[in-house]
Amino acid sequence: MKLKVLLVDDEKDIVRLVRYNLEKEGYEVLVAYDGNTAMDMIWSKQPDVVVLDWMLPDTPGVDLCQQIKTDLGAQKRMPVIMLTARAAERDRIAGFEAGADDYVTKPFSPRELVLR
Image (tube, rainbow, N blue to C red):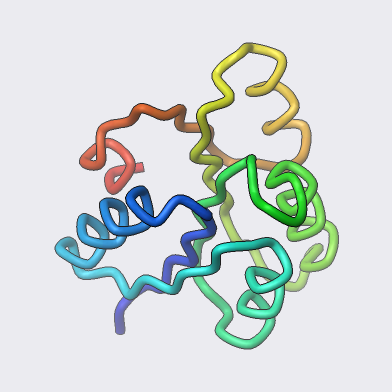
């Protein structure tokens, strides 16, 4: 059974790059381009991990990360990896405080992201 990754990013080029690399490694990749769709997919598709951009059109990814962790609570452990251009220390700290399990900044190595 393939592990399901929910990729949440509104940049189509990033989505194509990440999707290609994850699928090449055997992951099933689900895609959402905004936070509302991502939350719907979390409940309906139950991904194993979420790769989440900070700057989404409808909600900040950091808020979405916090919502994911709060809504799921103890029901299910769903790791969240922030994938964002926001590289300042205060942004990384905010991401971890919101519940992110890892934080990768753009530009990034697709291979490193897959390994994480």
